[in-house]
Length: 320
Image (cartoon, rainbow, N blue to C red; front, side, top):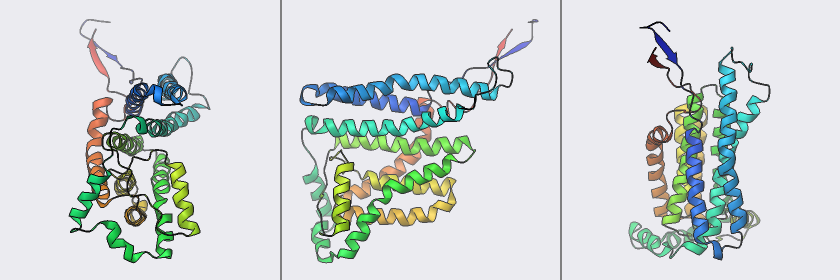
């Protein structure tokens, strides 16, 4: 180039976006826990294979998706435009993170009975008694057990599995990539933060069937089978996730905000009435929701930048 001219050098987007980095950090942590209790864990080999496979596959899929985006954004790319199956790769890349959250959850469910020294249920129950003026939640609610209300709230408890997933699906249909990225990242970060608390302050919660009806007993038994991790009472991940999802709906998808408020209120009532959580679990779950929402943008920036891997980085000018 002629002297004095400036060459525009475009930086390639990072290979791993914040989702990838957060998931890999969590998987490495889970692998470390498994190695710690290897001899006591019958399924250690299989769990290690599952976690390790995703650690290896994630950079490979990220590389493919990065190249497909470059081809889609550059009409003059030597390899031509992105092929017809490119959206499938991007969908798989995003869905991988749902599976990776489940991987870490199941790994902790296998490992924690072998690594925890003690649970904190007694301390949480004492805090509840102090908060409620010398009476426990069970003592207050035992006089108000109604079969219809038990069935209604046990069903309401299941909204935790529906509402955040529905919100994610609706936001994923939007073309605004930044919105899709921050909503997804905040919800995923929430799960990993909860896992850290479950590991550091394990507690099983009251966990008892309060009404012997087909609906209540059916939901109670189904949750016991689905929720492999039994030391996940503090703080309430159900409440935290629902509050975060409702906040995100208010920010980015207002049509789902009012249903979110109603569903969140039902889940909060169900966690206490159905004896899944102590009152202090619910309070701390709401506090943690605020912390995660406030901190998610900073965490995203720290581990990869805003919408890294999706938005083009700014061009860098180098002297010729």
